[in-house]
Length: 137
Image (cartoon, rainbow, N blue to C red):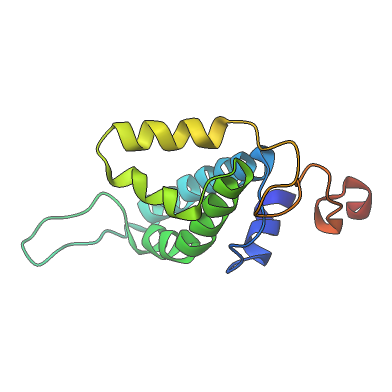
């Protein structure tokens, strides 16, 4: 949870690097909370209907959550790419059908550069008080 909150605190920060753990813990909690918003939409009966009469399978709570998390999700993805030594613009490779998404997932799974790269120091070696387990007690 601390990684999720750390990403939210750094809402607009694209500089620096994000470790694998920071990225994947954010993704995990994002999936959990998104699922909760879908369940809330189902309970309250919220659905989005488009003019043509087509009804989307989710409602306004989920849509609001997705819109609010679009920027921090993108920024943590860019910082994760920085950790493996790639430009944040590499996120655009996801627009290539199938192959782009697979390549991006491989980059997200790859261990970051051990030493300092042009995007900053290795996040595993940098002291961040918000992520230090001792500061949370």
